[in-house]
Length: 325
Image (cartoon, rainbow, N blue to C red):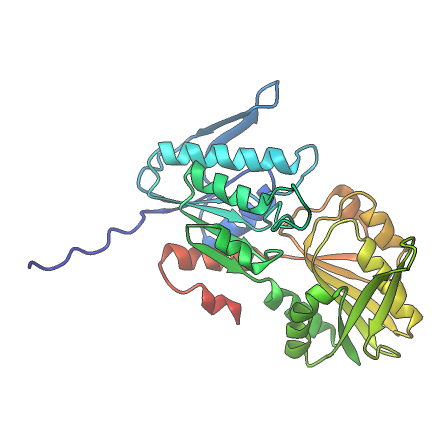
């Protein structure tokens, strides 16, 4: 046998952006020291996607940043289809490898059949990403970690915990208790509490016998303590604002909240403004609406460095798990 050939690699690193969050893409590209890829992304009058790559990407390592969230006039579905069309264009233009970077993975909450005759949308999205030509996926804080198993291609699953924990630690809050807003999030809240050397409390939600109201029981001592409600995402903010009220009723001195994904749809901003929550810490996996940016209670942390480092490690074929510490 002759000597083995060296691995050819995946060519130059290229970072492209969809319409969902170009600001985050620019931050990631700046961290990597590259310019965002050249492409024209428009919509025809009937809203169909028009996409053309304006540079040669044959044999290159392409990363497409597109959280599948709503953004302004664009819906979750529109941003998802846009991503699929971009992936198809790169595949047909002979990119060596295509990585879909989804800081927020839409439809993740529909991950099982919890009622008869319903879809498992998280699996469907995994299927269509693969069918479009995706070679690997980079995502962050999936609603359930086992969604990684819905893919037959490599998935790098990042966590924003280091970014949020660093921010909370710098606040130097006394008598700190991390609170899970439901029993399902207890494991995640426990991990935060351990890293911050804090106590743990859990909100137990129960319906009254006649089903008309929700009772929030606090499991754990929160009297006189600074409480941070920790969740993976906040959508309409109903649960988290009710939890804040329950903590105050149980004698909490201060109530803050943190979440990775600030979906913040419908009445969320109004509810947060009127709630007992002093400050809500979220990351920029999803772009804030104008109302969200105007809300003084909301503090946004950037995950661009974390995503950028993961992209660098994937491109250089080095460990991504080193970013989890």
